Length: 301
Ligand code: ADP
Ligand code: MG
Image 1 (cartoon, helix red, strand yellow):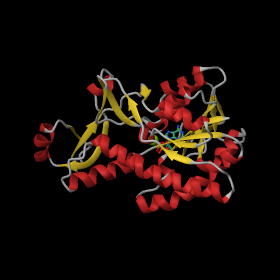
Image 2: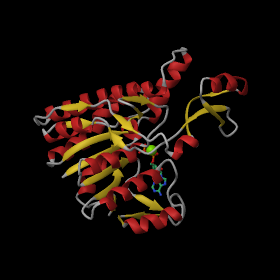
Image 3: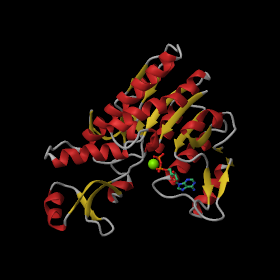
């Protein structure tokens, strides 16, 4: 099967060294899927990493814009993932190349998200710093009594600029890492593309990519083995199968936390509803293979 895998934060660790150790562990269940005969395309998150880069740039007064910070995070996360996956493939005598694509994802300038930035990024500032930051064009908000933070919009992905390249690489049997951190958000400006300070949700970008490459499965790998209703409560119930209709009811009943499980469920619904054959799976990294065999995880169809 052709599968788009969306890797969560737990696959990458807390800092660069931690990540370089962890990716070798992350590579094993991914290569298991390749060994099973699946074609996989990998999308990953970048929240902590892009935050770290952005912070380092601010601390050293380097005016590196946010989209560039995103590109840097795609670069080094991709480097770690591709080196680990490549070595795991070699150890199993599987001949395949792994490549990371610096990916630009087109968003719409008229996306409502630009009117209402919600994603906090970077460090906390004091009230005195706010006017000069706002003069730089930043939107600053008070973050629950802890100080002021910059917020950026989270627009929907519309198109993937490097899609033809991605198709070509996949179709010639390579393992592709793309749309890291949801992709670098860009808007069209005549023949040019212009990076915008925003964060695209990686689960949504993975969903768009999965539709574009006509994948059979969208597999969201995160910290939990299954999706629950009444999550964390006494009457918590883990789900094996979830129809898109039922999922929409559960969204209305607020079973899924915004910013964590909710975007995953929404992405899975959109993918599963796009054709009758397409299915989505939410499970943990170590259960990916078992999940695809129908042994665990939550399947959305
Ligand atoms: P990722 O880095 O993989 O995107 P997130 O932290 O954003 O991870 O989202 C996954 C987390 O969502 C789980 O670890 C879990 O704590 C939380 N979560 C919120 N609501 C639910 C739910 N209804 N069922 C399962 N997990 C949930
Ligand atoms: Mg997340």
